[in-house]
Length: 276
Image (cartoon, rainbow, N blue to C red):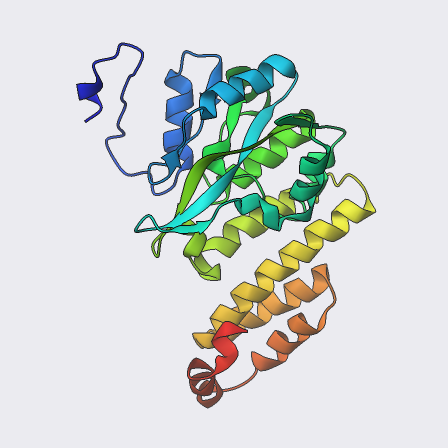
């Protein structure tokens, strides 16, 4: 399919083996790239016309940016529309949209990093990064099964301002087998690792509180899944660790639930606990 395009500007590379995660293919693509900018894009998403042109114009206006990202819509695995402006759910994005002049907005003074501590609002397929930025911050972390993109955004945001394009540039596909629809057991460990790295050098007390909140949130979610599966020792440790990061009722609840027996676990599997 790619070879049929018959364009010398398009080169196709394929890894001999499945890496098990997105970081290695991204890194290999970056290493063989020859252009000034790297545009990331996942194979199951849909790019809209004008995406790359708008990204180039963003960097022409703000050459100091380390990363540019855009708004996007979402669709299901069959192509049905779910949300037209996915990022409107984030208060900060709505705020900068109200301030943006035209389509572009520069996020500086560590504001992007502070907001990323609250939530990962950057969609991977909407991202464009100058090739030189990877020389400064390094490549994607291949030790992470997922969350390598979140880790990269935070690393870039520590050293560079970010740019936002107030335009829907792609449709993000959310399927039953997609990473975003996976449970805590698959997602939480990498998220926790990424967040814990930020505690090595927190910007200030508020930033540290936000990071600890999300570490606790992810550990609680993982603890709940362990309880449902009857793995009480693991659940207990996670709940205790969560409580050390942030003292809240949820951590205590899962800690005490982890002392219950197999009969209680059987009850949980057939109750609403799974969705709590």
